[in-house]
Length: 408
Image 1 (tube, rainbow, N blue to C red):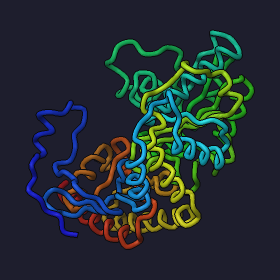
Image 2 (spheres, one colour):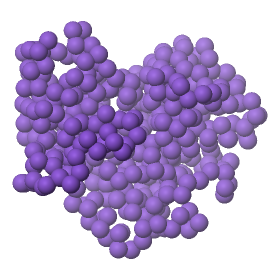
Image 3 (cartoon, rainbow, N blue to C red):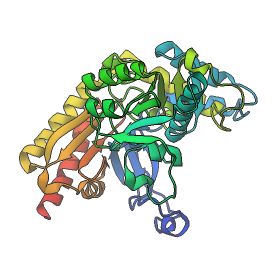
């Protein structure tokens, strides 16, 4: 594909008109197809970033494009004063294929987690007492950027500097069951965790830890919330990661890949927990938007198929084989983390805190990657990326690593 256009807008416009909370790359993508992206100058990139685990089926997947085009000629928005067919169809899919009985749609992972945390406190207050409000979370976790969710997240660098934080939130080390035992009590309403920590370096929960937390939640009448915003929707090889552990949460949140690139999120829960809610207690203007849900239905049907899910383990293996080839030559990685195509490469000691340098150098060689913290490289490509694209993208990445290592 040849793409070149006279750019009417330049990268320096960002520095003039956008709030300075991001530091985007110097090129501007203008077209994507599958696992490839083209910039304003027609330069082609291989995409191992996937919009941070969002573009689970790559760019412009034909079934998603078709769903969006067809829905765009029917109904765009009606608000939650009314319901709509795509929202009901997507909710039914989620109910049919998970533990859940009830679904709440929103627009982002933060909103889904906000709804989950509000539901957990509301349930505890209604069912038990007004003092059962403690939330237990974990260091290095990430649950969103609203004041509530960023405070629940276990990274002070994101939550400090905005004044008083919501109260009754406790953070303990991840995968440390004794630490949870030390703080959980009858005032605890919920424990929230990511089965695979996304922004926290792609650390996986151990089976023993999840089983222990589930048991503690049952013992103290606390709800267990799984944040699967990043690790859900096929990313780790099953529709949701909890299904690999055999541990069923009380509430689960999903976003990112749920819409395959179209903004949508969902909170999933049971009839019993949902019973404390009533009209007006929570809401959102755009949640359940027909366009988003129509695309979500198409994405769900493709992702939740044997053809896609059964291939993820092999694609992960190929990624690690290619990373090992690079490592044998340059010794830049100390271990590999995550599950499925939520893959992290821990940088070895000489390259700690240089993850962003690897990301930036990779773009020079036309491959898009991510970081997860300062010392872990993150790869979240399309779930249907071809083996050829993995090999070709890794060859480009190898050149980036060579340049960076030789420039020390």
